[in-house]
Length: 258
Image (tube, rainbow, N blue to C red; front, side):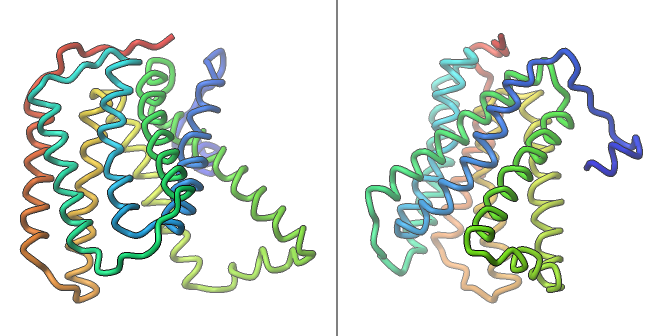
């Protein structure tokens, strides 16, 4: 993105704008969210982890109603719950291993849910001042600084800074980083920020549940995983929930930014 900005292919302007909100937004997600999610999933069973992350649309709905005054109708609340229920059904039925769950893991996942909710609310609020591209670029730059500082610091502590550069000689690592960095991060977050600049936060967040359906399809097509009845039922609930949430209007559709 920096190269595109230097070449003036994309434009960003942060002059005389409330940068402090972008700093907080970037810390909430991707920094805090991914740290909490990664370690939270390690310390909980896959079913508990999936169930906790599935609560994000509900968290966004509650926070959006309080901070943005975007109060969903009763029908929308019902369909949001329907969509989340679809994710929960697929997660629980597909979990063949119980695994151990620690309280710390649950707390970390709860922190991830709150971080994701906070990000959605702040992105919606600052869309009055920043373009989706400006928000996305600031997020990526902040994450780049923080995560690289953590990585370099850990290698320096071990006295093995050369290992920081070692993965750069691995073609698989490079291709994976490019995919995760460009498509899964820059493109994905730009689309999220663009959606949040146009739609209520709860309406946007419920689309995240569709990723579960995409994962199922990818597993069947590329990994030859089985396709079960609960996949069909859960996917139907997710799609029904997403449709219903976007079919009906919010009671109040405003951006209450300071």
